[in-house]
Length: 431
Ligand SMILES: [Zn+2]
Ligand SMILES: [Zn+2]
Image (cartoon, rainbow, N blue to C red; front, side):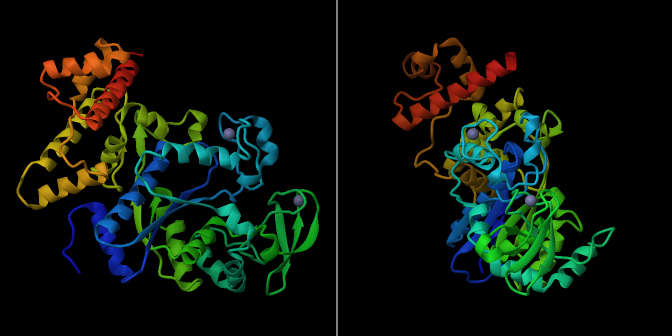
């Protein structure tokens, strides 16, 4: 195999190819429960995966990027900004909870579609999987059955990391009641195949189901995750700090993957939190949480990608937003780009900088693009009326030597897009 690369996602791709040699198609996975607004912190998982996907392609491999919407997860609690009356839906799968704003067919769909739209121009090539569909179609029935067969081994593995052992008899499944739709249920018996008898503590229903046909059974998270590594044949998947901690779901997942599902666990990368205004961006902030969409108000897609490509995933960082630091980020990106188009030494540092830039830009333009320094863009954006940007704005940039005499359409669009963001940034800075 080729020489060990210098850029972090190239190294991960390299390691993935080493661990799983000669795969016809590599599978990189990530996912989230659409339990509320999918925020800029969650985006780090997506972009970390995407960089590895792009690196594998760069190394000549075929790759599939799958993103799981865990919309068959239970609705656990009512987040901030959602009516309190939604408490009555707790225990149902997210796909069965109504949309709090009434615009989509379900709670899950509402948050899923929002993120899918935000990702459209981010150069991530994702195959979305709606897990509820797979569960309901019985796709996982055989692996669920395998879990039931090996339930004492599973219990043993999980108990190693628990203060209190799991209660006996242990069945590694949650049943959604066919009567009330919730998962306040207990398994009473299992026939050794696909038949389970359950009792519902919510509505009192007691009946036998065939989970392969009815699809209303789901393993708890710690088992669900490695089960899907097996089903999807995952080669790489990053995980947040909590999952990656010692004894966390990543540790138990690895062991379950090997011992229960007979699958080499995927290559792992822990990613750190991103913060804004000094605090972690987290879903507990409800509807007001900082999203990718807001990030896009002041950063163009390649600059957002650059923020994440120049920082290793295991390093926490603050997203500069309403501050002068934004200028520095833009300037730094422009410098990387300039260097990229210059003939330079072929040393490690240069190669590293080139990969940081390529991963940010994705479709690297043929010629060096025209970039207006962000600070100057903010000045022009505030002094020239928006409808005159393409005319008088460009003229003024030519006069000051910030733009060449002839601008092609792509460059003009790039200039205008930067003016828009600079204007928005200046507005935020003032308020
Ligand atoms: Zn909606
Ligand atoms: Zn029930």
